[in-house]
Image (cartoon, rainbow, N blue to C red; front, side):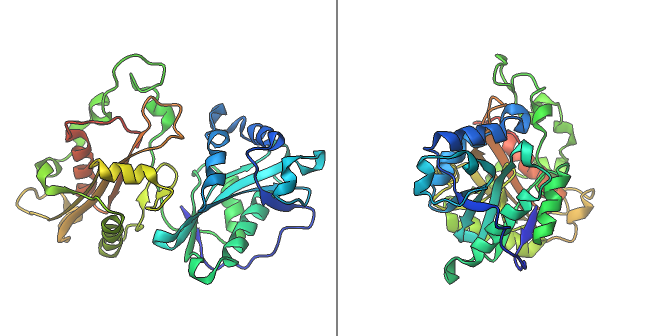
Amino acid sequence: MMTSSTTNTSPPASEYHLREYNPHNQNDRASLEEICANVYGGGDYLPQTAAKYVADPECSFLALTTKESTAAETTTTTEDDTILAVANFKRLPAQNSAWIEAVRTHPDHRNKGLASRLLRSLVDMSKEEDKHKQPRDILTCTVESNVGMQRALQKVGFEQCNTISTLSFAKLRDIPGWKPDDQSTPQPLLDALDLHHLVSSTAKAISPSQWTNIFTDELLLSYLEQFKLDGGTSGYLPGLYEYIVPGVNRADLKQSMEHGLVFVLDVPYDKELSSCDSDVNTKTNVQAILAFTQDERISSLKSKWVCSIVAYSELAFEAALNHAHSSSDRRGSTG
C-alpha cells in the first residue's frame, strides 16, 4: 500500500495528452482490450468495469494519448489518438482520501515512463479540486512483485504506508470446488485446508454473541478510526487490492451491512482463558472488524465473496477467522 500527500510534480511532456476514456467509442474499447489482453493471465476485469468507472461521479477514468482532444471529439478517433495508458482516480470523501487504481500501459509502450506521467497528472488533478474536496491522502496498491509500478510510484512521491494481505488466487483455484467450472461443492477455507487446529482455543472461546452487527457507514467509520488509534491499523477496511470506503459508489458494502454481514468485536481480553497469546497480554480489548462483500471483478473463482478483516493482534485475527467459519450462513470467500 502506498500513499502520497505532498508531492512536487510537473505536467506531462507536451507530446502526451490526458483525456477521458470514452466507453462508447469503438477504438477506445479496442485499445483497452489490447492493453489488458495479457493482464492477470488474460482475465483482466478492467474492460468489463471501465464503463462503470466512467459513469461513477466520484471517479475519473482517464487515458493518456499522443493527441490532444476533448471528450466530445473522442466519439471519432484518428490513428494518432490511440490510448497508451489508462488509470482510474476514485474520490473517497467519507475518509478524506482518493484512490488510484487500474493503472495499465500498452505493452508496446512500456518502459517509457508513461505510468509515471499518468500518475503525476492524477496527483496534479487532485490539487485542482475544490478546496473542500481535496483529499488528505492519495492511496494506491500494487503487488510486491510489480517492481516497475513501485518505481513509477516512487518517482511521483508515493511512499509505502501499509500492506494488504490477500490470498493467492492461483492457490485458491487448486481447492476442490473453488474454480468456476468445478462442479464439486466448495468448502469454506479452513474446512477445505483442514486448518481449524491452527486457530487457538482462546479465539474459539470467544462467543459468536460477542460479535455485533454494523449497520451504518457512520458506525463503521467510527470503529475504523478507533482501531487505528488503539492499535495502529490503517484506518481502512481492506478489500481485493483496494480499500473499501463507504460512499455512494459502494452499493456492495451497503447491501452487506443491510444483510448483517459486517461485524465488530470489541471485548475485554480475559487473561484467564489462555496464557499463550502474548501479543495481547498488554491490550485491554480484543478488537476486530469482519466484513463479507461481493466483488464483481472476480471471474477466476466460483465465489465472488470477499472476506475482509481488520485486526491488530493475532488473537483478534484468529477470532475473526473463526467467526467467519462459524456462521450458519457460510459464504465462500477469497481472502
